[in-house]
Length: 88
Image (tube, rainbow, N blue to C red; front, top):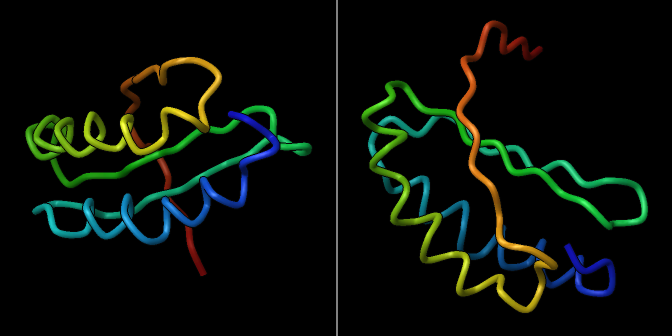
């Protein structure tokens, strides 16, 4: 994540990435975490099923092109199970 381009990354996330995920069946949420100072970021997507998550890979790949000037390294995908998702 290029700390000089955090604002641009947030704009692309709000205008393109989140709307693209919202169009897909099973989408349940998107969280973007950034390290203070903006050097690292982690995006978390949540899905109803693994198959729906797997189907979202195309959106993620398309967005890499949008973010290529903002990222210092290619993104890494890791799969996790949600044990708790507590919201007010």
